[in-house]
Amino acid sequence: MTITVENRAIQGGGVIKSVARRLYAQQAMRPLMQRARLAVHRFLVFREFVGDAHEAARDTTVRPDYLFNVEHVERELVLRYHQVEKGLVLPEPRRPFGIESGLRQRLSDVLDLAATHHPRTSSEVIAGARTAVEALDEFNEFGTYDVRAANPGPGVKKLTDAEAFFASRRSCRDFDTKRRITVADIERAVGIAQTAPSACNRQSARVHLYSDSTQVAAILGFQGGATGFTDCITDLIAVTVKRGQFRDGFERNQRWVDGGIFAQTLTLGLHAIGYSSCFLNAMFTRRQMKAVRSVAGIPGTEDIVAFLAVGTARDGYRVAGSPRLDLRTVLTMHSPDGAK
Image (spheres, rainbow, N blue to C red):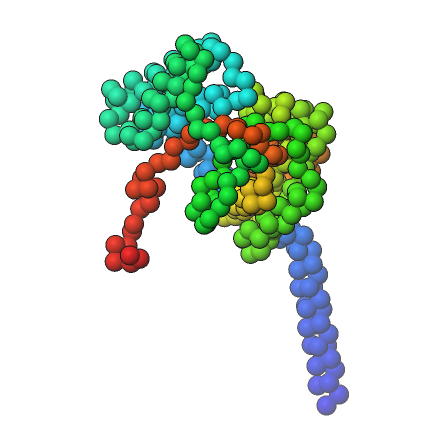
């Protein structure tokens, strides 16, 4: 009996040592396993971005002579004719406009390309481009141009229904510097923007307001898209998103979606309380972005979605025509037996 007990004791001691060794091995391996998981995670995220880069390189072009499909032609036409529209609604358009820069010639070249090689180019886009060429020629020859004039007043039409509200919000490039937005109204508009939906309610959007003229000028100097009306931009907003709110490769683009929804809701909030705005892009190289962050005081953990020039529109300000595509171009009905 004693021998049996002793044997069991010895066996029990062996089991304990075996378990201890396993636990020790697991503890020793844990950091290595964590590093391995992290490496796999980073590889999977990197792989998704590489795929994105490949598609971007395949589906985008830079120079007009590389235009080889209808989508690229339409893109170039819209980009060029909107440049004309924006230029002609500035407070003081320079004359002649679009000649030295080659804008007039590029627009004509792409129109010719569409006519000769891409007959399926959208008729709305063609019409918009031709109208822009005619307006540009008229302005350069006579100093006059036909653009849409906004209603006089604070830049916001009296609304009667929801559709009128959305249709009446237009980009403003002529602000009254004597009637600036108040902090209380900025807070009110941002509060409205906070009603915007976000993935899993993560609310990653952030708002940076700049009202110092020196800082605004420095930021706009990097941005470069407000040439011709920077002098009337007294208040500037940067909409950013917290990158760390999203995880894994499959969420790599979600911050831009959430940030875009928030930014649009912010412009509608500003519009609702009587202020005008103009979206300004945030397209920078990595080096430029680093410089912009430094000037604007934006942390490296936040990505800039867009800038917004905001204020009160000058009485009688003009807006770009910006014609919209035909609804049938935008809407595809996949279920003919569904909604009627």
